[in-house]
Length: 359
Ligand SMILES: *Cc1c(COP(=O)(O)O)cnc(C)c1O
Image (cartoon, rainbow, N blue to C red; front, side, top):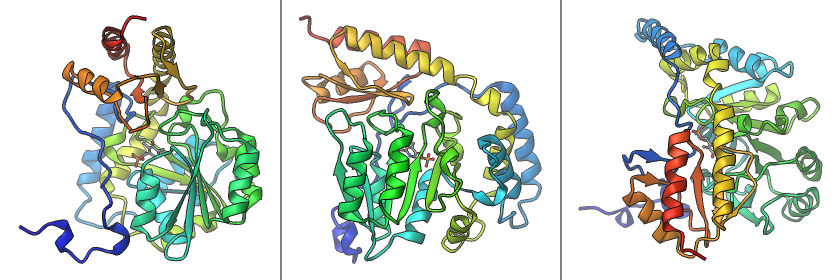
């Protein structure tokens, strides 16, 4: 048997671990920040009809420019965006990869503020881009001053601000984005995977006019309950979209993906109807865990980073044994928990309460 170390792997991939959130069929899965509510049946039926129509055309290559979907996404985001400012790919991970292929690469660098999304360094190594992690302060919140100092010091080619930030939940203030944009002359990505859950803040899409190096990445994987379809998208200057056309594979977005996503966008109101309930469950979970004595970090997303566990590995395993999967990211004393349905939230609160030593 050949092993990985026998292969002439690229040097910057040697010793790296693939993305690996555990996939475990348990009754209560609260580990990858999905929307755990099912899609309404009427929407399922309409998507299925659109898919059936698309299947009849799959003997031909598809619309490479996916104009119908891009126009639906432009309309959904609002702010007067035009179709040529929109782009999409198989998950926002692919959008981010295309951005790194176009603007990163050998001799170039990507900066972000850690802890943050674990895929950023992996996408950097996959594209031979230098990864520059800058630690966040103890409360994880970014300030204009901190961001400006880091960007002036490191002068990266690309910087990513994740807002709300995964895995900490920390919201991202508009002043931080504006300050970051002015502090360097590279590409600034705002990753808004969880934006729909952050009702208190306006999307960075509002900042696009006059900022041609600002890229706002979004996804249907979280609030839209569409993770399995793989549809991420981007709003930016039309010239940025032209740059991504240079690196995308021909026909990269399947006709079936386009059909499903376009149909879902027709029902965006119904698809997002569960967001308010998920926010309520997040706040209920936060209150319950604070009452139990844990440190709950403020979150604008559909998950919470919770500190104060003396044995996070043990709690993770005990919950798993009870059929509840959460996320252990290796942050000392911390675990991350997705806000699910009311029943799922009740189950995770009860299980953690049971495991909490009386004080
Ligand atoms: C989940 C997530 C994504 C979304 O990934 P997809 O490829 O669109 O499923 C992107 N960024 C962050 C920070 C995430 O947590």
